[in-house]
Length: 262
Image (cartoon, rainbow, N blue to C red; front, side, top):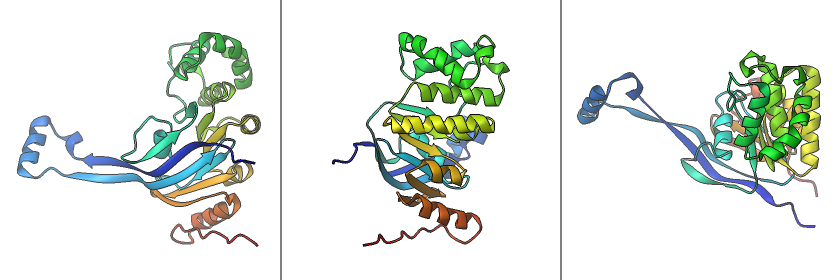
């Protein structure tokens, strides 16, 4: 039996930010510093030489401490940013939940915002008409359809964003700490929904600080540390165990794959 097709491929992806003192000086001062050689620019690499492939039906968990480069990598994968070096190849429609409040208008109602987010994801009005009821029911916002979005709690906003992205059935779904929102009951419901999406053949990337969640849901894991790729593997348990030891202060981030038996 042939392997499922590759849905997302990253090759030597590097992302650079240029940091200088231009934000704190005026144009005239900037020109003078450039002319006199006193203007300083520092290159900051958020990610360096990250490479991985994920196939149809895979769920990739990305782990790493704050500042590891996880969210920046997701922006490149989803097409929001272009890599400074390397390439990303996508093979499917992507829905990305990176910043949950983005793409919503605080003065518009919950219903209006649902249609707005659907349009941003490329879905037709007819499709949203057919899907809207399921979205609101899953988000548990039936009593808030006509409320301005800005009046919702952060948990409600997160539930709506997750519900839209998960119920429209994207081919590639990218989640940045989304399953950590809401109460325990909604988190369980969200995880169940994710399992349904995976069984349906979708490819999913999940950034999570919950190692048990990555262990239980993901079949592949990517570990980043200060922009460096420590490991990409199907040995989810082994990588997560090593990462937990690293969090305990065991030393520099390092993962040594366990040799396969036989």
